[in-house]
Length: 411
Ligand SMILES: [Mn+2]
Image 1 (cartoon, rainbow, N blue to C red):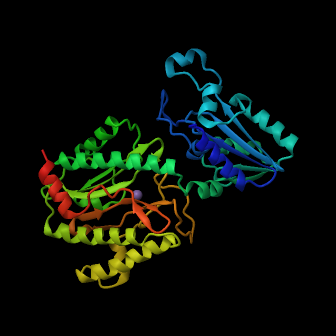
Image 2 (cartoon, protein in one colour):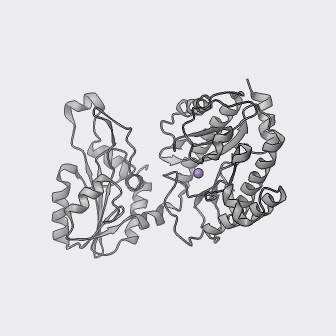
Image 3 (cartoon, rainbow, N blue to C red):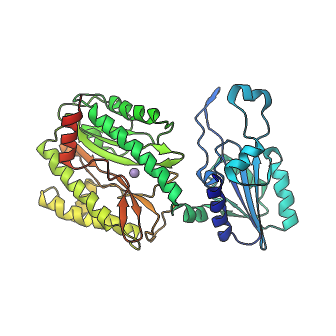
């Protein structure tokens, strides 16, 4: 049954719950865009992970009193006539079908009901995202103020512990997101031409996503041609490329709330210049080095250290630097991050060791402003029992493969 996986997630959380504690998760609301419209709604990812539900305003409560564990879902009331305008709210039956939570009430009675439960079960601890200091959503902030007599704690560390290890069904969704992203990268390579606008390249990506039923990108696409590629989070995408420019595209589809995050850098003409090749080969070497290095037990931080060791040797070889300190002029981010329900997924804690079932990005880059060259190559990598598997291995990245593909397929 579809809702089984979300029930399993709740069971995992219950194992981490202290006695006399209540955990509250809000689905959230879409933020206002202007006075008459809202931005598209993105469900809170912890709420989704525990319920499979994607409707604004819903709330999940799980509490523990001794050996008694209880879960309760609060949904929107029937929206009557409004249903004709914006669609009907989830019914109790539908909410049960998605989540497997048996006890369902309306959210209008949530605060009263929670107060009753707290009193009746003598609960003392209340877990919300971000705790008291850093409530992550307006709902949380509002909520915390209502319960200042209780010990308010942060639910995020526990959620991160669960979410960082992916179940097979989660990996399937990520693989689907990556496979659509692959098609979209190929479309960009096929339809590129020198002196294109960056947004025209981006449009090829978007077209493939929509065509495949993806309504949401994992994040705003970075399509940075030529020297724009040295700006890490460049996403204006409004410049026209000039002759011989490469374009750095950092983009990803999402599939059923799970993200892909891929970067490829390729020449719009289909041919790398010698200088571009020189930089590209160094970054590609770093990308493969770290992918080969990934295995259970290694510390997250050492991936970055290893890359810097490699860059030190390579950049000295081409005479770009003399000392290790100078690397930060050309490489100024980390080599990767966790990936899952969020692009920069939960899970990163100091000293954390990689374990089977984690998914990380590997994205070394080099940004050489004085040459007008920026290269980043990013893959999505699963940590396995005895090493790693590059989930995005089918998205071409060797110079020869890119040049051949573009020569054979370009319009
Ligand atoms: Mn990334």
